[in-house]
Amino acid sequence: MELNQIYTEILTEHNKSNRNKHHIENPTVTLKGVNPSCGDEITLELREKDGVIEDAGFTGIGCAISQASASIMIDLIKGKTTEEALKLAKTFFGMIKNEITDERELEVLDEAIALRDISHMPARVKCAVLGWHTLENAITGEKSHENRFVSSKSRK
Image (cartoon, rainbow, N blue to C red; front, side):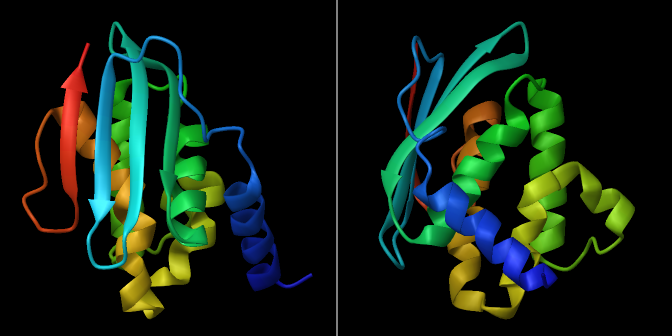
């Protein structure tokens, strides 16, 4: 089986699966991210305790890439510290921008590597990074400095 076919299967599986696409109990942070250029949107819910992401989930609508990317991201961040989650996001952005290409550095992204070639489709990059930017802003408490998406936040 070719690598591209494996990547396609990973994205398809995550897009169709509801294992991460749901509300969570007692979220401490809820943040909505919207990609106005295509209409993709997610609402990310995190339950954080003592700097650790105990649980995470998302709801939303959008293309297969945005929904699969958010699902893969959630698999990666559950149980991680917020610092580790931000480092994963930074690595993901570096991969998408082709700034990080070393396989050893990218290993931490696990299935998210399936999105590495999205940079060859510039119109789809915003889809792939929507969940990751929402995560970054949910953790840091900042709104996007770029018009990649519009967000609204609530802390409980």
